[in-house]
Image (cartoon, rainbow over all chains, first blue to last red; front, side, top):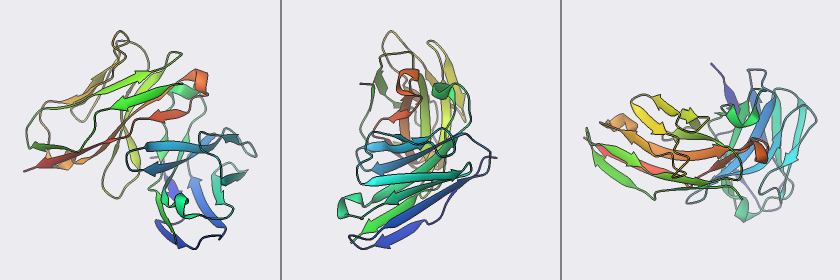
Length: 115
Length: 113
C-alpha cells in the first residue's frame, strides 16, 4: 500500500514564525503536491513537484515556498506565518505516467493554527 | 479555467437510503474525473475514477458515470450505511493543466441508523 506521512497532525504557531511542514512518501512516486483545505472551498493547490529539485506554483503559492531535495520528501515552508494561513494542509503523491490519469495518494493532513 | 461544482451539504440520510451527490464540471480539454472520500480525521482517498466519456467508475457500491454531454459525474449508491458518513469530493484532472487536480468544495454526508 502507498503510504504518505506528514510530520505533524496538529501544529500551533505564532504570527511571523517560520513553519516547516514535512511530507514523505514510500512508493518512489515522481510527483508530489501540497494542498490546503478550507471549509466551503475544497482543496486548493499550493505547489507541486514532478521531480527532485523541481517545483511549480499551483493556484495559491503566495506566502509559501517548497523544497524537494530527495525524491521521497516534499517540504512546505511558510516563510512568515500569518493568521490567514490557519488551515488543514494535505500532501499527496502520484506515480509518473499520464498526469491527468494518475491517482493521487494523500497523507492524513496537518491542521495548522496560527495565533 | 477548469472548475468543478458539486451539491452543497450537509446531506443527511437514513441507513439503506439511496444517495446521489451531483457533480458538474467545466474543462477546456479532455479531463479525467475522480471522486475522493475523506473519513473523519483522515486524509483523502480515491473512491473511484473515470478517464474518458461514458466510462463508469465503481467501488464499494458507489458508482459514477462520465457524461460528456451533460458535463456531469454524479456519485450514486443504492443503499448507504452509517460507515459511509464522510466528506465526498469531486475532482477533475486535465492534461491542459499539467495533470493537477481541481476539486469541488466537498459534500458532507451523514448517515443515521
